[in-house]
Image 1: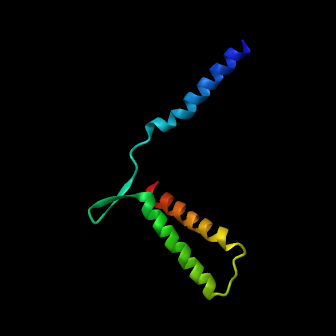
Image 2: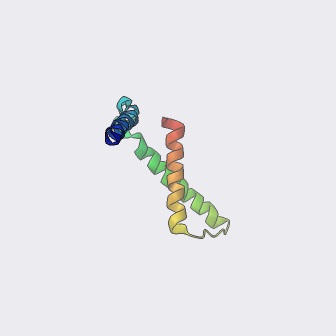
Image 3: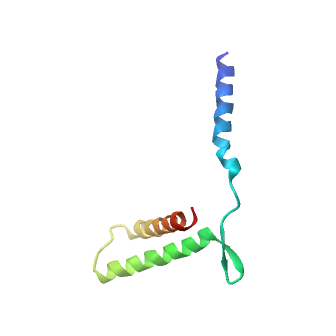
Amino acid sequence: MMALRNSRFTRSLLLLIGSPLSSCSRAPSVDVLGSFFPAWLLCFVAGIVLAALVRLLLLRLNMKVPFPIVAYPSLAAFFTFTLWLVFFY
């Protein structure tokens, strides 16, 4: 009896988790000179450029970053996700 109840609960849980995914629409794309690019790619490039600009600003101000191998990719990811949320969500 308990196994039947657990399997029923598991199926119900999977159905509830999967139902929001069924309404996903096509991926947003941006028209650049007549060619469609995925929007995340443009946000990714802009995030890398913004992270590079922040790095140049920090170098100009003579500020040291403790772990640059972690900090700058994290900063690029932050800018990428923020741009995605602001412009395409």
